[in-house]
Length: 269
Image (tube, rainbow, N blue to C red; front, side, top):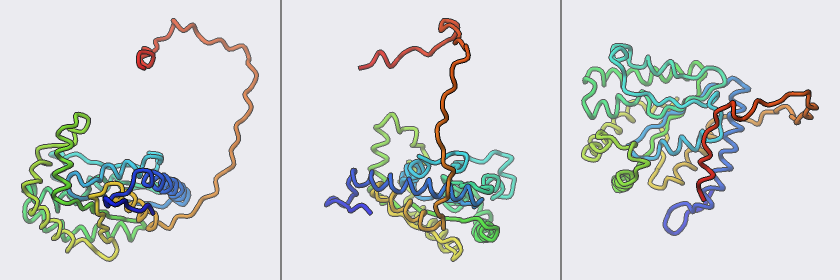
C-alpha cells in the first residue's frame, strides 16, 4: 500500500502505481465473475462531493460494461412513485456473471428523501423495516452485496463545492439540492446515523471510506472490494494473431465517395 506524504495525502506517483496494480486485479476479478456466473452488487453512498463518482470511474476504467454496469437512477417517474419502493432497483440487479455498481441506491429514501421531506414518515419507517429484509433476500439468493459509505468532513466538502463552482467542466456536478446539503449538514448526519442503526446488518455491513484524501479513499475502497470477493485467476485460452490472407482483388471505393470528419487534429500544435 502506498505510504502517505508529510501532508497526510498519498503521493501521486505512488497512488498511480498502486491504483494500476489494483485495477489489474479488478480485471482478474471480473473474469472470475464472468466465468463462474457469480453476481455482485456494490452500493456507493455518502455525502455530496464525497468522491463516489471518481471512485466508481476508477473501479470500472478497465472493465467491460457487459459485465460491470453502473446504475445511476434519476428521480422516480410518477408511475414509479406508485410502485413498491424497491421495485425499480430490482430490475438493475445483476444476472449471472455480472456486477452492478449503484451510484446511489435505494438508500435515497433514508437520506435525501428523509431530510428534504420527499417521503412521508410512514414511507420512511417502512423502508427501515423492509430494507434489511430486501438485502437478506438478495444474499440468500447468492448475490454478494457490498455497501460503502464515503465520509467527508464539512470543510473538505465546502472546498470541493467551491472548486466545482469555479470549474466549467465540473459545474454540472452541482445542483441546488447539493448546495442545500451545506445548510442541512446535521440533518444529514442524523439521518445517516439512524440509517446505520437499522441497516448495518451482519449479512451486509456498512463499510465506511474516509474520503478527505480522494486518492487514499479510492485505493482503500478497491482493496477492500478485492478482499471481499473470493475470486481466483481464471485460465484464459491462449490467443495468437492469424496471418493476413493474400489480397484477392478488393479495391476500396474512392475517398471522395465518402464523407470524412474534418481533420481538426491537423490544426493544433
